[in-house]
Length: 61
Image (tube, rainbow, N blue to C red):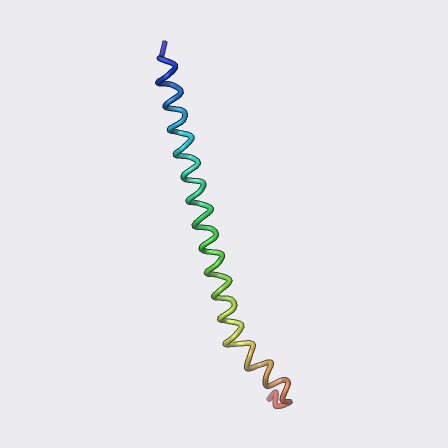
């Protein structure tokens, strides 16, 4: 039979590792989402702004 103290320490180590991994996963996801939003905003600024300004000025040719 195993020592209960060792067993609990192992399970707590496993728990801390999995919680660290999930934390890192969510951090990476949030950073990627933020980058995508910034990229989308930059894309909107470069592509849609000239189209909107042309449409407003009536020279949409």
